[in-house]
Length: 299
Image (cartoon, rainbow, N blue to C red; front, side, top):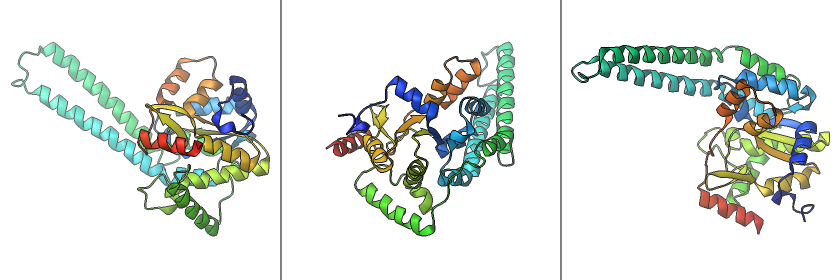
């Protein structure tokens, strides 16, 4: 039965290893953008450089496009988070400076508290400088650019994009993944990004006649079946559709899973990277709707 309905079965440990060792590795835009947010992004790139041959790396054109479109926005969001934390610290420090509000706190404890606050503020200042550096050619951005030099697919023509926009609308009505996701975006291309990328990956797999490992960093219902706050598996209809259309296998995993499987021997840097990569499910539909979608596609 697995031969006819592969999407309903998970790969064995050996099959997973073989796919990671031999397939084309494709990263989602969320993976590249998240590398700019975390402090162990260079460790991620070190592992990829060491464990994956460059000729096995590939990016859909629209993944690279969205990465550049969103880069400044992502940096701005993170800087605002840092600034918000710094403001909260200043308010806390000011409240403790008023002896009338806290007359029973010993001065020695206050000194220790102020020292800790100042250390945290210094760390936040470093984070702010680190993030703003990405707006120019930071080392991390340069390494990402170098990693995918010559490994980016061709874009679609405008008429092809228009056809995909229509298909994405229809898939959305049918609750068929992937389809519309970034629904709040006013940019039509971003709103239908996931289907565009999916079709570009299918095209590449057909032409190269190679299986695909798709690495994502957002656990959303557009890609995964999520139940009780846990990712169960990639959507079975995605796997079935891909294999039927391309005659190639596809393995969809998170960046956390990829790094975990590439590094059987964990250093402290790798463990810190894994902690930063791990994400909780990010829902765009409620769980009951997602469960109904999965039941519907199974019938």
